[in-house]
Length: 45
Image (cartoon, rainbow, N blue to C red; front, side, top):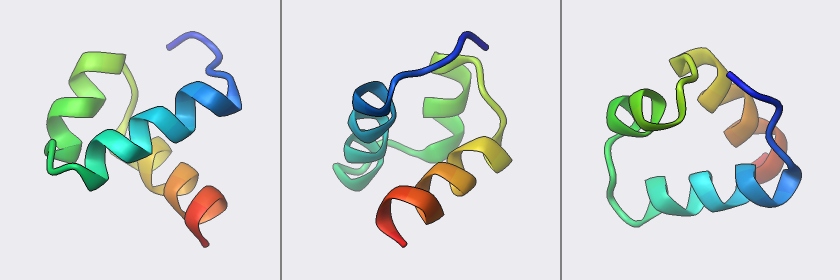
């Protein structure tokens, strides 16, 4: 996975809020589930 900017991370989190499954987002952006949940905790915590 390439390094994501804060803007890209927030964008991905918004996609999840819109109803796209986390598993699908992880596959689309080449990241692990744990990365997604760490970002969610950091930016929505």
